[in-house]
Length: 547
Ligand code: G1P
Ligand code: ZN
Image 1 (cartoon, rainbow, N blue to C red):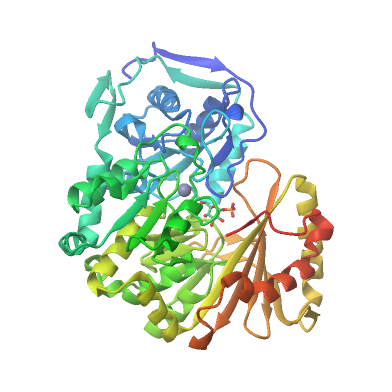
Image 2: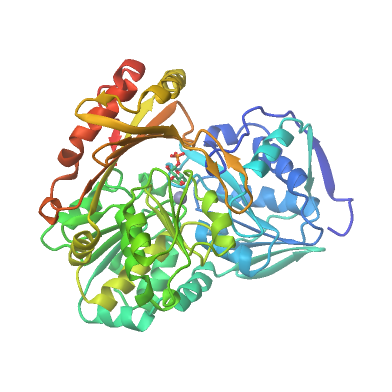
């Protein structure tokens, strides 16, 4: 802003609940609608981050309820805090990976991403704000903690008096020394994908009669999928389902998993299933990949990607290393061993990959929660994963099922499942965790159900780049037969507590590669339930969701 004349200082009261979780501050829309709630949190960010005068900030979101009005508030507060320019997408829409990429390419000071990811939207749903740094990656814990601390002392915030910005018009609008630039994000993102994948080959594959079905679940990826799959690769427009972003996601729970997107699991089982079926979540960073007759578990997906990466243009020289979050299956480790590259084990949450990516220590990484990504951006990337698989199918000219079966024959199969227990009374979850923590030292050598426990620890991560330590990142129980159970509490919920129990069982023998997952893992599930006394602590005799 040219003068201070149009900057106001508004008095407010601090809120005590603005501690960001696994991925930013996520709350019910009604919480964000409290007086000055958003402004207080933004003020805490601006005071903590101290953006250089005149710098750019990328701002955009997944289109959920409160998206556009929040962008107007951010613009006015950014102007008051000396930001020179904000860059956003048409209608204020930016997928999380596209925003991350834009921050890097435009050398912005950082980004404010408005999303609650896969949580439902609409007036009764969730909203969220996430700060990404100039690297394009999520703010590290030290920064989010500093923001939280700052938020507790906010008694006023600064905001400029700006006219409402036109978010639907591409180009730059100037207001004194402050400007907003609205970019064609799908076109820009498509350009990034063209540098990584063989578009001609994919288009040929589609022209040859192969079919893809991508479900945008009325969330942010619709315009990106139309641009890439339909306009650039020539798929028919009905290959993209629910393409229009809506504030309430059209009532969908925009989480690409077999429970919330059961219609896609059913489509995969139908006689007329397309060759590739896929979906992404609210903000476009998650992915689900299915082929005729099967869904690929995310742990298998990233392992298969690594095994074939050098067949794709962007990865032809291989990758220096890979990483997976601790609860993710060890299928990736097996491929990394065969390639002689390191596989890092990080805590849950994408931000832990960022240092490794930034230091070029890894080129590919993934989480069991349907998140996969590479060094092209600093967030996981849903459509990128879909294009990776599409390019792979076109390059191999084999079906999803054939590629996966061959992979298991070579590396063995890591059967995998996650059980979620939603516990209304969060104190019951805390009690379970505390009891488990206390029992850990005595567990090795003991038996539970049909399993003998070999190892038991609480995961503590030391970041190999900056040596920061993250403690209490979940419990790992290893059994003599090579199977594993992991427990941790979710850090993204907006009410109660969710206990996540991760089950893994390795099967080397190809004769055991086509078993139903739940049945094959049933003995491990029994061990998990007994070991943590899940029913006693939570009152739940069965998981709320099996993913
Ligand atoms: C969940 C997933 C985690 C992912 C995060 C953000 O976090 O488990 O892998 O990084 O969402 O998408 P959680 O609720 O388990 O803390
Ligand atoms: Zn997401």
